[in-house]
Image 1: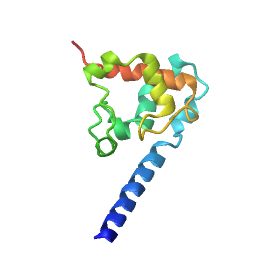
Image 2 (image 1 turned 180 degrees about the horizontal axis):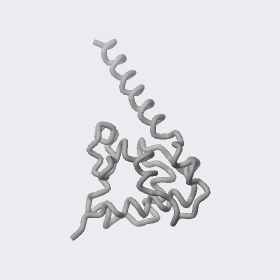
Image 3 (image 1 turned 30 degrees about the horizontal axis):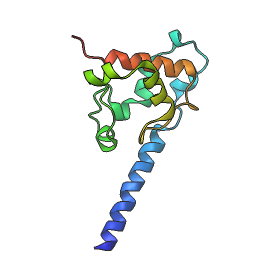
Image 4 (image 1 turned 45 degrees about the vertical axis):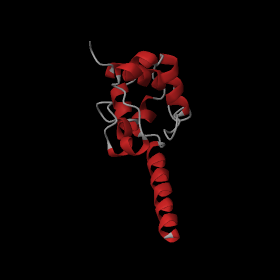
Length: 125
């Protein structure tokens, strides 16, 4: 029984490591847009490249990875209302919980553009 627990723990740890490493590399869109001002950044493409694996293309976090790590549902009205732009930017930079930090992977303009794009998931009244 003890061996099964050790083996299960190993595979869970390995899964988190692989998940985190897959999200933490810089993709081609991020590299292409690194020098652009915020207004010129293609935030939907950056989101698809760096965030959709966990948060989903629609921001609802109903992906396998999103459920596995407890990713934030970006369409949640209460979360949208209570989270400031500064908090969203900080989360992108520092990576809360198991989310990877993007401060050294994306430019300031890319991070600000992503934060603004996250606001587009806010439900309409």
